[in-house]
Image (cartoon, rainbow, N blue to C red):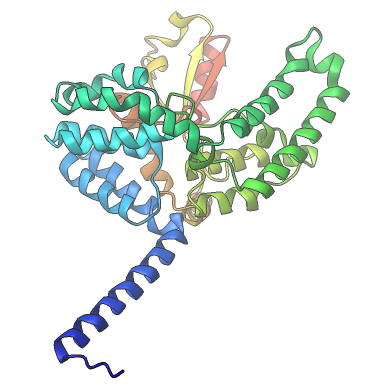
Length: 360
Protein backbone atom coordinates (compact mmCIF):
# COMPACT_ATOMS: atom_id res chain seq x y z
CA UNK A 1 0.00 0.00 0.00
CA UNK A 2 1.37 3.40 -0.94
CA UNK A 3 0.71 6.61 0.99
CA UNK A 4 0.99 10.09 -0.42
CA UNK A 5 0.97 13.36 1.52
CA UNK A 6 0.05 16.74 0.20
CA UNK A 7 2.57 19.55 0.82
CA UNK A 8 0.11 21.19 3.24
CA UNK A 9 -0.30 18.07 5.38
CA UNK A 10 3.46 17.49 5.35
CA UNK A 11 4.13 21.03 6.56
CA UNK A 12 1.52 20.67 9.31
CA UNK A 13 3.01 17.34 10.41
CA UNK A 14 6.51 18.79 10.58
CA UNK A 15 5.19 21.76 12.53
CA UNK A 16 3.48 19.50 15.07
CA UNK A 17 6.62 17.41 15.61
CA UNK A 18 8.69 20.58 15.98
CA UNK A 19 6.25 21.97 18.54
CA UNK A 20 6.26 18.72 20.52
CA UNK A 21 10.06 18.66 20.52
CA UNK A 22 10.15 22.29 21.65
CA UNK A 23 7.66 21.64 24.45
CA UNK A 24 9.64 18.60 25.59
CA UNK A 25 12.86 20.61 25.68
CA UNK A 26 11.18 23.50 27.52
CA UNK A 27 9.67 21.11 30.05
CA UNK A 28 13.05 19.52 30.78
CA UNK A 29 14.75 22.91 31.11
CA UNK A 30 11.93 24.12 33.38
CA UNK A 31 12.26 21.08 35.64
CA UNK A 32 16.03 21.62 35.95
CA UNK A 33 15.78 25.35 36.58
CA UNK A 34 18.38 26.81 38.93
CA UNK A 35 16.33 28.98 41.26
CA UNK A 36 19.34 31.12 42.15
CA UNK A 37 19.38 32.36 38.56
CA UNK A 38 15.88 31.85 37.16
CA UNK A 39 13.68 32.72 40.13
CA UNK A 40 15.09 34.60 43.10
CA UNK A 41 16.59 37.54 41.16
CA UNK A 42 13.11 38.15 39.74
CA UNK A 43 11.56 37.91 43.20
CA UNK A 44 14.07 40.49 44.41
CA UNK A 45 13.04 42.73 41.53
CA UNK A 46 9.35 42.32 42.37
CA UNK A 47 10.00 43.18 46.01
CA UNK A 48 11.91 46.32 45.04
CA UNK A 49 8.92 47.36 42.95
CA UNK A 50 6.68 46.82 45.98
CA UNK A 51 8.94 49.13 47.96
CA UNK A 52 8.58 51.67 45.14
CA UNK A 53 4.76 51.35 45.38
CA UNK A 54 4.61 49.94 41.84
CA UNK A 55 2.29 47.06 42.66
CA UNK A 56 1.22 46.55 39.05
CA UNK A 57 4.82 46.21 37.95
CA UNK A 58 5.57 43.89 40.86
CA UNK A 59 2.65 41.66 39.92
CA UNK A 60 3.95 41.33 36.38
CA UNK A 61 7.40 40.36 37.61
CA UNK A 62 5.91 37.80 40.01
CA UNK A 63 4.07 36.28 37.05
CA UNK A 64 7.32 36.07 35.14
CA UNK A 65 9.12 34.46 38.08
CA UNK A 66 6.42 31.81 38.53
CA UNK A 67 6.54 30.99 34.82
CA UNK A 68 10.28 30.27 34.96
CA UNK A 69 10.14 27.43 37.49
CA UNK A 70 8.00 24.40 38.42
CA UNK A 71 6.66 26.08 41.56
CA UNK A 72 6.97 29.30 43.52
CA UNK A 73 7.39 29.82 47.25
CA UNK A 74 4.40 30.37 49.54
CA UNK A 75 5.41 33.85 50.71
CA UNK A 76 5.87 34.93 47.08
CA UNK A 77 2.41 33.69 46.12
CA UNK A 78 1.07 35.61 49.11
CA UNK A 79 2.82 38.84 48.15
CA UNK A 80 1.67 38.42 44.56
CA UNK A 81 -1.89 37.97 45.81
CA UNK A 82 -1.64 41.21 47.79
CA UNK A 83 -0.34 43.01 44.70
CA UNK A 84 -3.28 41.62 42.74
CA UNK A 85 -5.69 42.80 45.43
CA UNK A 86 -4.23 46.31 45.32
CA UNK A 87 -4.44 46.57 41.54
CA UNK A 88 -7.93 45.24 40.83
CA UNK A 89 -6.88 41.77 39.67
CA UNK A 90 -8.99 39.91 42.21
CA UNK A 91 -9.41 36.68 40.26
CA UNK A 92 -5.68 36.43 39.75
CA UNK A 93 -5.15 37.08 43.44
CA UNK A 94 -7.53 34.28 44.39
CA UNK A 95 -5.68 31.97 42.00
CA UNK A 96 -2.53 32.64 44.01
CA UNK A 97 -4.42 31.90 47.22
CA UNK A 98 -5.38 28.54 45.73
CA UNK A 99 -1.68 27.81 45.35
CA UNK A 100 -1.18 28.71 49.00
CA UNK A 101 -3.91 26.28 50.03
CA UNK A 102 -2.20 23.61 47.93
CA UNK A 103 0.91 24.17 50.07
CA UNK A 104 -1.00 23.86 53.35
CA UNK A 105 -1.96 27.43 54.26
CA UNK A 106 -5.30 27.33 56.08
CA UNK A 107 -8.46 29.21 55.20
CA UNK A 108 -8.57 30.56 58.75
CA UNK A 109 -5.16 32.17 58.29
CA UNK A 110 -6.15 33.77 54.99
CA UNK A 111 -9.37 35.11 56.50
CA UNK A 112 -7.35 36.88 59.20
CA UNK A 113 -5.13 38.84 56.78
CA UNK A 114 -6.36 42.42 56.36
CA UNK A 115 -4.30 42.81 53.20
CA UNK A 116 -6.63 40.31 51.51
CA UNK A 117 -9.87 42.19 52.32
CA UNK A 118 -10.38 43.13 48.67
CA UNK A 119 -10.15 39.50 47.60
CA UNK A 120 -12.61 38.38 50.27
CA UNK A 121 -15.08 40.99 49.03
CA UNK A 122 -14.91 39.69 45.46
CA UNK A 123 -17.66 37.42 44.15
CA UNK A 124 -15.11 34.64 43.49
CA UNK A 125 -14.33 34.35 47.20
CA UNK A 126 -17.44 32.29 47.98
CA UNK A 127 -16.43 29.73 45.37
CA UNK A 128 -12.91 29.70 46.81
CA UNK A 129 -14.30 28.99 50.29
CA UNK A 130 -16.68 26.34 48.98
CA UNK A 131 -13.85 24.45 47.31
CA UNK A 132 -11.45 24.79 50.24
CA UNK A 133 -12.26 21.40 51.88
CA UNK A 134 -11.56 19.60 48.60
CA UNK A 135 -8.28 21.47 48.12
CA UNK A 136 -7.30 20.85 51.73
CA UNK A 137 -7.88 17.15 51.22
CA UNK A 138 -5.76 17.23 48.06
CA UNK A 139 -2.97 18.96 50.00
CA UNK A 140 -2.90 16.19 52.57
CA UNK A 141 -2.91 13.53 49.87
CA UNK A 142 -0.11 15.15 47.86
CA UNK A 143 2.12 16.08 50.80
CA UNK A 144 4.30 13.82 52.91
CA UNK A 145 2.54 14.53 56.19
CA UNK A 146 4.24 11.61 57.91
CA UNK A 147 7.67 12.98 57.04
CA UNK A 148 6.73 16.40 58.43
CA UNK A 149 5.66 14.68 61.65
CA UNK A 150 8.97 12.82 61.80
CA UNK A 151 10.85 16.08 61.22
CA UNK A 152 8.86 17.83 63.94
CA UNK A 153 9.87 15.00 66.24
CA UNK A 154 13.51 16.01 65.74
CA UNK A 155 12.66 19.39 67.21
CA UNK A 156 10.83 17.77 70.12
CA UNK A 157 13.83 15.52 70.81
CA UNK A 158 16.13 18.54 70.69
CA UNK A 159 14.04 20.40 73.24
CA UNK A 160 13.13 17.65 75.69
CA UNK A 161 16.22 17.57 77.93
CA UNK A 162 16.93 21.26 77.38
CA UNK A 163 13.59 22.02 79.01
CA UNK A 164 14.01 19.38 81.73
CA UNK A 165 15.18 20.32 85.22
CA UNK A 166 18.87 21.18 85.10
CA UNK A 167 18.81 21.64 81.32
CA UNK A 168 22.11 21.60 79.48
CA UNK A 169 24.10 21.76 82.72
CA UNK A 170 22.78 18.41 83.91
CA UNK A 171 21.97 16.62 80.66
CA UNK A 172 24.80 17.83 78.39
CA UNK A 173 26.00 14.35 77.36
CA UNK A 174 22.50 13.14 76.56
CA UNK A 175 21.73 16.30 74.62
CA UNK A 176 24.89 15.94 72.50
CA UNK A 177 23.98 12.33 71.68
CA UNK A 178 20.50 13.41 70.63
CA UNK A 179 21.95 16.15 68.43
CA UNK A 180 24.25 13.66 66.69
CA UNK A 181 21.39 11.21 66.20
CA UNK A 182 19.15 13.97 64.85
CA UNK A 183 21.76 14.81 62.22
CA UNK A 184 21.93 11.18 61.11
CA UNK A 185 18.15 10.98 60.83
CA UNK A 186 17.88 14.26 58.92
CA UNK A 187 20.63 13.36 56.45
CA UNK A 188 19.06 9.93 55.88
CA UNK A 189 15.69 11.50 55.08
CA UNK A 190 17.31 14.07 52.79
CA UNK A 191 19.12 11.25 50.99
CA UNK A 192 15.84 9.38 50.55
CA UNK A 193 13.38 12.20 49.83
CA UNK A 194 15.47 15.24 48.96
CA UNK A 195 15.57 18.37 51.09
CA UNK A 196 12.22 18.79 52.91
CA UNK A 197 10.88 21.87 51.17
CA UNK A 198 7.35 23.19 50.78
CA UNK A 199 6.51 20.88 47.89
CA UNK A 200 7.44 17.82 49.94
CA UNK A 201 6.13 18.59 53.43
CA UNK A 202 4.00 21.69 52.90
CA UNK A 203 3.66 24.54 55.38
CA UNK A 204 1.89 24.33 58.77
CA UNK A 205 -1.31 26.37 58.17
CA UNK A 206 0.59 29.68 58.20
CA UNK A 207 3.57 31.13 56.35
CA UNK A 208 6.60 29.86 58.26
CA UNK A 209 10.06 31.34 57.83
CA UNK A 210 11.90 28.25 59.04
CA UNK A 211 10.47 24.78 59.66
CA UNK A 212 11.12 23.50 63.16
CA UNK A 213 13.56 20.80 62.05
CA UNK A 214 15.99 23.59 61.12
CA UNK A 215 17.11 23.55 64.75
CA UNK A 216 19.07 20.39 63.89
CA UNK A 217 21.15 22.40 61.42
CA UNK A 218 21.57 25.35 63.75
CA UNK A 219 23.04 23.14 66.47
CA UNK A 220 25.85 21.97 64.17
CA UNK A 221 28.22 24.87 64.68
CA UNK A 222 31.78 25.12 63.44
CA UNK A 223 32.93 25.91 66.97
CA UNK A 224 31.80 22.45 68.07
CA UNK A 225 33.03 20.68 64.92
CA UNK A 226 29.46 20.07 63.80
CA UNK A 227 28.37 18.72 60.44
CA UNK A 228 28.68 21.39 57.74
CA UNK A 229 25.35 21.66 55.91
CA UNK A 230 26.53 24.29 53.41
CA UNK A 231 26.52 21.96 50.40
CA UNK A 232 23.13 20.54 51.34
CA UNK A 233 21.62 23.99 51.85
CA UNK A 234 23.10 25.45 48.68
CA UNK A 235 21.75 22.60 46.58
CA UNK A 236 18.35 22.96 48.23
CA UNK A 237 18.25 26.64 47.26
CA UNK A 238 19.23 25.87 43.68
CA UNK A 239 16.49 23.24 43.44
CA UNK A 240 13.81 25.54 44.83
CA UNK A 241 13.42 23.64 48.09
CA UNK A 242 14.72 26.32 50.46
CA UNK A 243 14.40 30.09 50.66
CA UNK A 244 17.89 31.57 50.13
CA UNK A 245 17.42 33.99 53.03
CA UNK A 246 16.77 31.03 55.31
CA UNK A 247 19.82 29.24 53.90
CA UNK A 248 22.02 32.29 54.49
CA UNK A 249 20.78 32.54 58.08
CA UNK A 250 21.39 28.85 58.77
CA UNK A 251 24.90 29.03 57.33
CA UNK A 252 25.65 32.12 59.42
CA UNK A 253 24.38 30.26 62.47
CA UNK A 254 26.60 27.29 61.73
CA UNK A 255 29.66 29.46 61.22
CA UNK A 256 28.95 31.62 64.24
CA UNK A 257 29.67 34.61 62.00
CA UNK A 258 27.50 37.05 60.09
CA UNK A 259 29.18 36.22 56.76
CA UNK A 260 26.01 36.56 54.68
CA UNK A 261 24.81 39.51 56.76
CA UNK A 262 21.57 37.68 57.48
CA UNK A 263 21.43 39.79 60.65
CA UNK A 264 21.47 43.21 59.09
CA UNK A 265 19.94 45.53 61.69
CA UNK A 266 20.24 45.96 65.44
CA UNK A 267 18.18 47.60 68.14
CA UNK A 268 18.91 48.58 71.74
CA UNK A 269 16.43 47.54 74.43
CA UNK A 270 16.99 48.88 77.94
CA UNK A 271 15.89 46.88 80.97
CA UNK A 272 14.25 50.11 82.09
CA UNK A 273 12.52 51.50 78.97
CA UNK A 274 12.79 55.08 80.20
CA UNK A 275 16.60 54.78 80.07
CA UNK A 276 16.48 54.48 76.29
CA UNK A 277 14.39 57.59 75.74
CA UNK A 278 15.18 61.27 75.33
CA UNK A 279 18.96 61.03 75.19
CA UNK A 280 20.51 64.43 74.43
CA UNK A 281 22.92 62.96 71.88
CA UNK A 282 21.04 60.03 70.35
CA UNK A 283 17.39 60.85 70.99
CA UNK A 284 15.02 57.92 71.54
CA UNK A 285 17.35 54.92 71.37
CA UNK A 286 14.48 52.45 71.51
CA UNK A 287 13.21 53.64 68.13
CA UNK A 288 16.57 53.82 66.35
CA UNK A 289 18.09 51.06 64.27
CA UNK A 290 21.80 50.36 64.19
CA UNK A 291 24.08 48.65 61.74
CA UNK A 292 27.38 46.94 62.28
CA UNK A 293 30.33 48.86 60.91
CA UNK A 294 32.04 46.80 58.20
CA UNK A 295 34.67 47.61 55.61
CA UNK A 296 33.87 47.88 51.91
CA UNK A 297 35.86 44.70 51.40
CA UNK A 298 33.80 42.80 53.97
CA UNK A 299 30.52 43.95 52.45
CA UNK A 300 31.74 43.07 48.96
CA UNK A 301 32.58 39.57 50.17
CA UNK A 302 29.15 39.24 51.76
CA UNK A 303 27.56 40.34 48.49
CA UNK A 304 29.51 37.67 46.60
CA UNK A 305 28.26 34.99 48.96
CA UNK A 306 24.72 36.30 48.74
CA UNK A 307 24.79 36.39 44.94
CA UNK A 308 25.69 32.70 44.88
CA UNK A 309 22.33 32.06 46.53
CA UNK A 310 20.43 34.44 44.27
CA UNK A 311 20.10 37.06 47.01
CA UNK A 312 20.05 40.83 46.75
CA UNK A 313 23.06 42.91 47.91
CA UNK A 314 23.33 43.71 51.61
CA UNK A 315 22.29 47.35 51.13
CA UNK A 316 19.08 46.33 49.34
CA UNK A 317 18.36 43.67 51.96
CA UNK A 318 18.75 46.24 54.73
CA UNK A 319 16.32 48.63 53.07
CA UNK A 320 13.87 45.81 52.46
CA UNK A 321 13.91 44.85 56.14
CA UNK A 322 13.30 48.46 57.14
CA UNK A 323 10.43 48.69 54.67
CA UNK A 324 8.92 45.48 56.04
CA UNK A 325 8.63 47.10 59.47
CA UNK A 326 6.55 49.94 58.02
CA UNK A 327 4.31 48.05 55.59
CA UNK A 328 2.94 44.87 57.12
CA UNK A 329 0.63 44.12 54.21
CA UNK A 330 3.43 42.14 52.60
CA UNK A 331 5.56 39.30 53.92
CA UNK A 332 8.99 40.77 53.25
CA UNK A 333 10.72 40.61 56.63
CA UNK A 334 12.60 37.90 58.48
CA UNK A 335 12.62 37.58 62.26
CA UNK A 336 16.36 37.00 62.37
CA UNK A 337 17.20 40.17 60.41
CA UNK A 338 17.08 42.35 63.54
CA UNK A 339 19.29 41.65 66.55
CA UNK A 340 17.89 42.97 69.84
CA UNK A 341 20.55 43.95 72.37
CA UNK A 342 19.24 44.09 75.92
CA UNK A 343 21.30 46.38 78.13
CA UNK A 344 21.10 47.12 81.86
CA UNK A 345 21.48 50.89 81.71
CA UNK A 346 21.54 54.02 79.60
CA UNK A 347 25.32 54.12 79.83
CA UNK A 348 25.60 50.58 78.46
CA UNK A 349 23.21 51.51 75.67
CA UNK A 350 25.34 54.49 74.68
CA UNK A 351 28.51 52.38 74.64
CA UNK A 352 26.80 49.94 72.28
CA UNK A 353 25.44 52.70 70.06
CA UNK A 354 28.85 54.34 69.79
CA UNK A 355 30.34 51.07 68.53
CA UNK A 356 27.84 50.90 65.68
CA UNK A 357 26.32 53.22 63.10
CA UNK A 358 22.86 54.74 63.56
CA UNK A 359 20.49 54.66 60.61
CA UNK A 360 18.52 57.80 59.87
